[in-house]
Amino acid sequence: MSEVNVTEQEAGTERGRTDGDQDRPPVDPVNPQTNETPSPEVQGLLPGGRPSSVEGSPSPSAEASGLLSLPWEMVTHIASHLPAQCVITVLPKVCHALGNVGKDSTAWQLRARRLTGSRAGFPVGPREDFDWPNACLEMEQLITCWAGQADLVARQAQEDERESRREGQQQRAGEDGEPVAEGQDDGREDVVEGVGVAAQEVAFGVGEVMEVALEGEDGDMQPNIGGDPLARLREELEERLEEAEAALMEGGRGQRVFEAVEGREGADGRVDHQEDLADPRHLGDGGEVEVVQSRPPRSPSPPPALECVSLTSGHIAQVNSVLLVGDDGRVCATGSRDWNVKLWDLQVGSNGTLLHTLGGQGHFSTHRGWVWCLASRGPLLASGGFDSTVRLWDLEAGGAERGLIRARAAVLCLSCQTDVLLAGTFDKRISMYDTRAAEPLVKSLRLHSNAVMCLAADDKYIISGSKDCTVAIYDRRAGKPLKKLRLSSYLLSMSYSGSEVWAGDNRGMLHTFSMQAGVLQSLSQFDVGHTSLVTGIHRSPGSLYTCSSDRTVKVHIPCAPPRTLCTLHHEAGVNGLSVAGGVLAVASGDMCVEVWRPRK
Image (cartoon, rainbow, N blue to C red; front, side, top):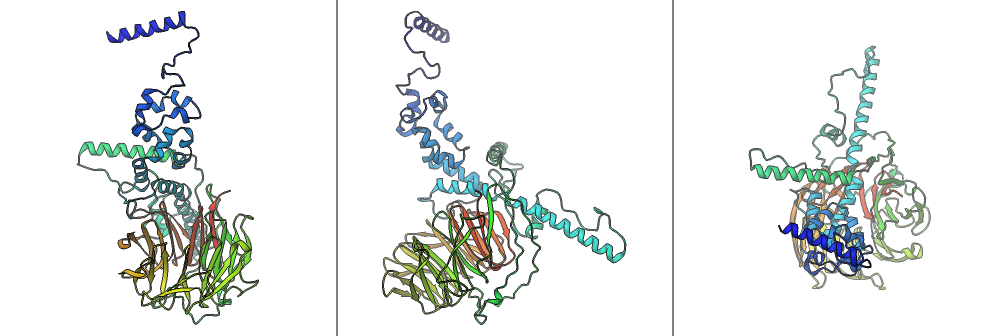
């Protein structure tokens, strides 16, 4: 009865408007209020007294679409299917109400869980003050750029396997005098077409774990056989939703990113005048040198998201260190065993352009020994070497020499802070320098009983790893050491940001620590497939890069355990890496610096 009355009332209202109020504007059947007055229903749906979207919206049609008339939970759920970049940068420009979607921490945490997998821990460290939006943005960009690598690697490995089989068949045919027809069974199991376990084993070696973390593909989730039927139904619905999300994100990606393998041979023996000096990363290891035959060069097809360029004409010996200067990844500095530091502009030319050889021209001009480490802040670039010096360069003045600091031993690691320059040396010390002073040495710390291999710091603390298998923390404000942790291995590389510390050791393992209020706590150890020294590591809220002397570079999502998106194989051991502005630079022992950057 009430429905009939309402209908009659609406009909009477319409007749009254038609007969006597021709000048009255038409009533919107969805939103009866005029554009000058915000809808009370919309105002009531903006949680926490959110401001009306009408005043800040560039187009009134946003309300007419009915989106903001939905419950706020549904609006945030719809927004969770948009890319993080859209939520952060686009929605705030649409209207104030949608701009508040990006301030919902719970929505970002749910998005991160879908990206990492329901059973993975994220973040690894403390959750307080964690940058969830930036973490989700970085993870989505990482997946877009790198997840397809594994597919191409596996396909190319299958092609190599087929080629080697054909060569073997031809060789046996020549020995036996009988031709072997193509496709004939030669007693070995065929590799299944497509990407699967067999293909991954061919690409990365049997027993190496290779996980591809695509959004919605959570390989560790298994059906709950014999369990609660409602729980099984809920899991199936979640899996279908994740598959739909993956289809949205992966759609239109096109070709996959490729594995770049360069067939170059090193020639560092020509310039190595320090043959009596061993690599400090291997001192005391007693390990044997493995001789591996180089694979033939390969012509990869270009990827849609990234392109790979090689800086091949600069150095005549192994490149020990690489550093992307600034936040945009435009300028790259390289340090080599040919004693030189070179600056490159990665935006000029198809393969980058050499800007300067610091300290002069020609070979052996920057240092008087191997260049082992680089660090920068603002216009200052510092290089440390086996000649027991730290040399300072002014990037704003074209790489002009800015100063010289004489240390007491070979400089193995550097860290530039706003007020001091930190140097870890072979004589077990950490030295603090004021680069502006005539006498730059501020303080020398003896926190370890062996060489200092890696450093990380901020304005409060210094964290150092040593060959004595310890990690030490020093309070800069109190001027005293706080704690020392003992490990079963020693750390070679370290990355410190926020409240998390990630480090790589001499056994190929990754270590994670939490850092809160001066307390350094060991969290976990992870095996990501490296079989030798982890020579470089870079961690940000949503990305993790590692490299090793086992000739690989790996890209991961930084959860617990890390989800490996791809593995890049090189012809020689990888000595270091640097990441900035979406650009990855890799230094290897074949005198080559490989740069992966967004395609122009």
